[in-house]
Amino acid sequence: MNMALVTGNRIPHRSAAVPFLLSWSQKAGCTTLLKWFFYHANLLDEALDYVSGEVGLNIHLYERKIFRGRDGYLEDVASDLKSGKPVLNFVRCPYQRVFSSYMQLCNRFFLGQEKKGIPSPGLLLRRSILDSTYGVNVALDYPLSFHDYLEWMADQDMSNIDPHHTPQSSEIYRYSNISHFRLDDFDQVTSMLEREYGLRSSDSDERIHSSGHHNPKVELPAAAAIQLLEKSIPLVRSENFKVPKITEELLRGTRMDYLIRTIFQEDVDLYSSLSSIAIKTSK
Image (cartoon, rainbow, N blue to C red; front, side, top):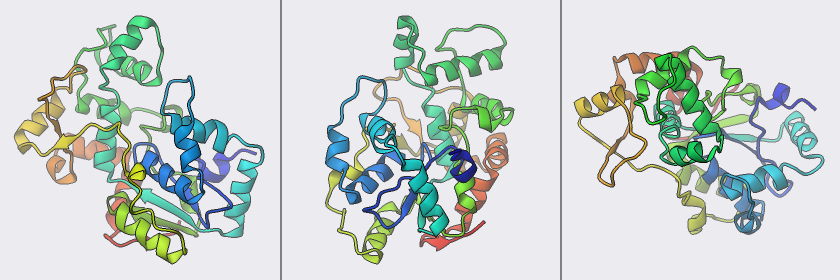
């Protein structure tokens, strides 16, 4: 079955033990959402205990190889969608998400991977953007600004790049039984959903809210933040280096704001349409 025709390239989480499907996208709380779903599917302990020798977070490897890898999973998803089973989707602020995608390319471990000949997706993508930006083969730690990244993104066919960098919107959005929520409201919304569906509370389970692989961000003076975005986030950063918090207000009126609105227009429109309380939308 070609699930791309049904859900795009992001197949939702589905379990007979959970009364809804959970839609997701990379760089939009996907690890936290997956833990929350596994908690209610009674699989969180098993998923957290899973160990794989492959590169990547073990819980996502469990998701891909064990949870979604079983026979009949895709058919069950398609059947649930056809029957009208509720679909829940969390939308991250597009400005924050695209900066998080950029930060994925500013990973000091790429230097070691290149030296050892490990062709990780992030390393290969950074190399591709550097080659496109400079037109020559420069060193991997050559400056690659957030602005450079957005300019490169604006010229790409989104169907051919890593989904960590593509818009959150997908084919599953066209289903009328989908409900969208702001990721910012995760704690309040999940508590509301647990009450609505008669599920046990996950509020006290700290494992769900700790992903452990994010760069802390701080509010910098606007001029300093913009200057940094026009220059580069270095691969190797000191402990005192401050990664700026990116907001729509910070970028308003800049070329970067225009590029984000152009590349991620549907995400921006959807996120803007959602109040702090979940509302239903249909396509």
